[in-house]
Structure formats: structure tokens, C-alpha cells
Image (cartoon, rainbow, N blue to C red; front, side, top):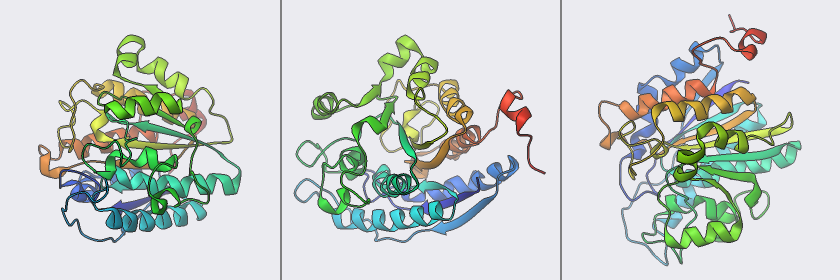
Length: 311
């Protein structure tokens, strides 16, 4: 499938400025070049537009709600257009509040074409806060809640139905910083979570085998990849780093197992913050992980032999 890069240069939902520079850093790190080197047809659609970050305090539990809505409407429309054209959208963020718009578009597309949607949310954080629970009002901590119908109407209603997704369509991997209210909410909703204790005890391979167990020919996989998923020793350029995350190889295994399914249909790549990075290390890691998602491997596998590189 052909790939479309969609830049979303905003940190409107974040507490720390800087990830608005993420799309540029990912391009400098060679994301387009790397994917083309794997034989992919890649079109960079440029950046969507939206309002600047006013850096104002929360109002009724939300920071920058009108601006977050504007960015997510624009991204929803951009992602929907690429899906309708038969292309695989790769969102270059930007903060994780953008997943509300991207996944709203993906969910509507899957319902329209009769595909089963499975979302893999890899992140240090649960991102399932509400205005009543949030300690900060930052909406990049709320996208999962909004997608499940818990949030302002303007965000919960971005898809073709409300809620955009159901709890059984999402698996969360790598969690290690979860607010008290989020812990209760995750348990009440019954969301599938593979936190760092699970990964420590059972390993990434077992977690991903369970996450991917239901994938079949009718599945559309959406990966929402927050770079703070990876340990900050490997990925320092993120706004909300949390120690004790997956190693480089564990993160690569996660990507490679998703690639092995051949069912990846859309991707969010978010929370790369060049202002906090060291010589673009985190953007380069992100590109490395994305290349693994699209077929880069150490050795030829059975699928590689059946589908040799283009050209």
C-alpha cells in the first residue's frame, strides 16, 4: 500500500512546548527516504494548519480546547482523504491529542468498508483522563477517553458515530505512569493493558502475541506510537519522559511483530520533542522503528521471500 506522510506541527494539547517541531525533525531524520528505500511509494502531503498555542491555563478542566478541536478536525479530514484514496496515512506529530482526529477518521473508514479495527496504543501513559480527573487539563492526556465517548461533544463526535471506538478495540502497551483516576477508569472499562510489570514478567513477545491474536485478513491495525513509550535513556526527546520503559530491542520487537501481520493500515507518530532532544536522537529512533514497521529486518523472512523488494 502507498504511504502518505501528514505533518501535524502542534503542541496544543501538551504541557511542554516543542513537539510542534516534531514533523520537521522526523523529515530531517529521513523518514520519507527510509521508507522509499524499502520500496514503498511515499507521498509527503505537507503539514496541516491550525491555530497557534496560546499557552493559557485550563478552563473547566481543559487547556486550549477550541484550538485542540480545530487541529483534530483538520487532521481527521486529512486522514480520511488519504484512506479514501487507498493510501496508508502516517501522521507526523505533534502531541498525542491528535490521535482523537486520526483514529476518529480511521474508525469511520473501517465501518464504511467493513474492516475490523484494532488499535495498538504504545505509550508510557494511559491517556484516559477526563476533565474531572486530570491534574493538568492537558488534552494529550485525554485522547483515549475522548475516543471512548468521555469528553466534550466536539471531540467525542468527530467520527461517524459516538463513541468512535469501543473498549475492546484498543490494547495499551508499555504503561508505567497512570494517574489514580485513570487506574480506576481502566479497570471499570475493561481495557486490555500490558503495563511494564507485565512486560517485565512475561516479555514483549508474549504481550504482542496476545495483542495480535485476533488479527485476520479483515483487520485494519492502527498503531498510535508515542515515543515516550521507549525508555528515555534511548529516547530523550519527549515532553513527559518516564524511566523504566522498553529497551531499544524490545521496542523493535514490538514493531517487527506488527509488521509480520501485514495488516498495518494507519499510524500515529507523536510526542517527538526536538527542543528536549540530543542531536535528533529521538527522531532518528522513530524513523528506525517505522522502518521496522514497514519491513526492515536483519534477515530475510518467509514473507520477504514471498514478496521481494520492489524495483
